[in-house]
Image (cartoon, rainbow, N blue to C red):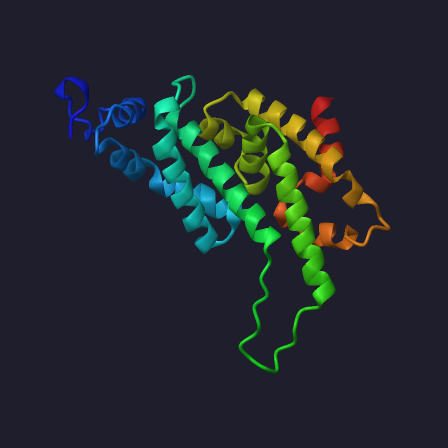
Length: 221
């Protein structure tokens, strides 16, 4: 495989940016090399975000297809890893939103197994849908930071490396994103709300969201 001027695009010396440009220029093998380099890392991102191997696999496939189509519009003002990370996260959130909009019910294999309380299951589904819809409403850079830190469990340092920005940028984006999420989801904090117990019991859906106002105030001090 070779890029412009006959340069081989399979070697480690070829940068990610050069691979993207070679793919956009028509190289039939450049994108496969890009996938090979980043597949494992992006799989980990998808799995942490969806917490479901099947959904993660489907989201990752969708993400790479999106990246394949969008490569011509890639601007080298950010790292390719950052670009792919954002596409994967957005793909995961989109699939999670669609899944929650069309919930399915799985019957237990054992006829004697006790069915989950319908009210609790519905509350959990409604909560997850609200959280994912709220994530889709905040700016992409803030969403990527919040998902990296609060959903995927990255440290601020690791999130900064993954997204190719400074640690302070991650902190500020998380703070702004959490503030927006707190406003969007503030009604869930009411103690007398029927979904309050669901919020308290399902923080894994988006850690820190229910404590966003307090967390943000502390960071602003």
